[in-house]
Image (cartoon, rainbow over all chains, first blue to last red; front, side, top):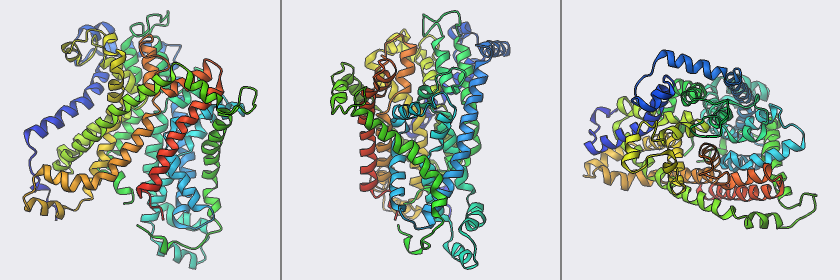
Length: 291
Length: 293
């Protein structure tokens, strides 16, 4: 029986705390959206939470896309190429691996499982400088694959698939398929995959967000400014804002342009968030994890 | 929980399913680790160098301060995470699954979309009294300029705040999900027995959350030791108030790319790697969280 209508009403202090944190989390985002519609002068002298003007937004857009003749668009395209190619490889690799770990027994299975857990818990920044040394040794510095392939290595995705297939796949179904002479691949293709939509979405979501927002790895591995993703590009723009860097030369970038660039950089992830909010805020991640 | 009894027999096709993943694991997990260790224990000519690279790193005047910075940052961040994430999850849980509760969970989660460089840029603005939406607050506590706000003594708190801003929402959702696994009957029974919200939280909910809290602290700790993008961008934006060598990861990067000393860089990487590995391994083995079989 649902008892939601019997929930106690929170006391005023609790409501205040929740509200203050809502302001803390949301205010900077609102400010960012509004900042992109202002001139630098309005940014300093106007009400911080006022709307500027469509003309100013337009002017900021023109100035931003004029920066190094459209560098921001190149960075965004780079981010998209890296994140989506890595996402595709991750799904092709992680889903079958998680499936095999969950439903079959093979030599080295336990070692692979433990290695996956350990690597998954290690922050991905740990291996950035060593990765540079490795990539440098095989002369792949500057190749986009030096970013995409490390992105595609996503142990957390394997772990999610492992948990999912372990819990959600009826064994009787696989046993029956085997009795019917179904090959292992056919069983995966016709039984496991059709059931895998939720975990594909979950792995895809986390992989895309992690790769899109990664800064350290491309910062180290991609020397060419026309190759960097938008995260690194934002740092380049920041370098050319006179208020933050007085030595910024004639390439000077105004603060509202940086705000607009930041907004463009986060839009894909924000969209993914809003589309995924059903499962995100329901706490499904917790439910998907064994306990 | 074990489901091993029903696991199908040995499979000869399993290698085909895991091959791609094993290759990636080897290429981007194992090989870089081996590489880092190799470089850390050799000199620039490739000869065995014992611990001398570690000694060079440890003797560098920036090394100990960088560890101190990260330690302070971790204290601030972990304290904020534990207190506020658990507190907010408990409050949100009382609001229920729909309506205001759901909206607030989404709002708290939203800054996660700005993880990485975007969050630092936004906070550079928010912390600059000249353009900040909370400039009145900054001035009220005595900060007139951006330079005053980002004084070195404030940095651990500021970095913790940025990390909390982007990362807390995800953990709140996880804790909220974990709270939902507590059966309503248990909470109802506690209520009938006269337990208030505080007592229920302290005696029933928080003990049941404990393993999730430990999990969060471990991951946050390991991630926090890797601090890089925040101080890196801040050092660009502050003309050196936060140095280019605020954290060990920055120092490692500087050794590799400014000093052309990959051996010392690798030594610092190995130290960070060991911290990450030990933390992860101890957690996997001891927590029982991942009772895989």
